[in-house]
Length: 236
Ligand code: CA
Image (cartoon, rainbow, N blue to C red):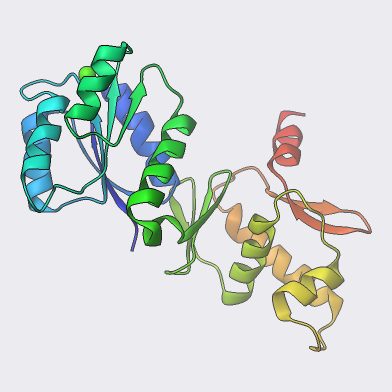
């Protein structure tokens, strides 16, 4: 099951940007632009983590945080506060309200994603270890599901193992023999061109929506997963 995030932010553009990034990282996202509505959403279903803007219409993020901490069923939900305030006194108030972490605007989505993963690792180690990410590809290892840019991709079991091997070793070039050993196992007789067949299938599935080709073919050497190459090819 995907870890769920409740995202509370009243600026529409920022909300959509963060929602996009969270979904691309494999999170299930519910979003609200209003403090009171956010409290209702938490009551409906307690999320695995809340990303909460400080300044909100109706109820402030700080007040939401205090209310969550008072109730037994939401006391331990990790909260990351977003705010334009960077001063030390505000930071202290944020932590006193019960926030687990604090991100000051402006911030990059990548920074927030890193904080989310760090907070989840501390609070829910089981959730954090279940997925692998490379560029916009997310592999859910427990559910055997893969998404690219938030869109689900259907892979056969061999393609899944192939992709996992590449994503665990980003940028490294593997010969067909090495890929056979890693993905099919040693002592199994399979023709080398079988590797090419499965690489082709993997590539086709990954590039379904016309995204940059992440699999690099290295002539007479083998294959690698490599975004730099893909971006360069795209730009040239
Ligand atoms: Ca705001």
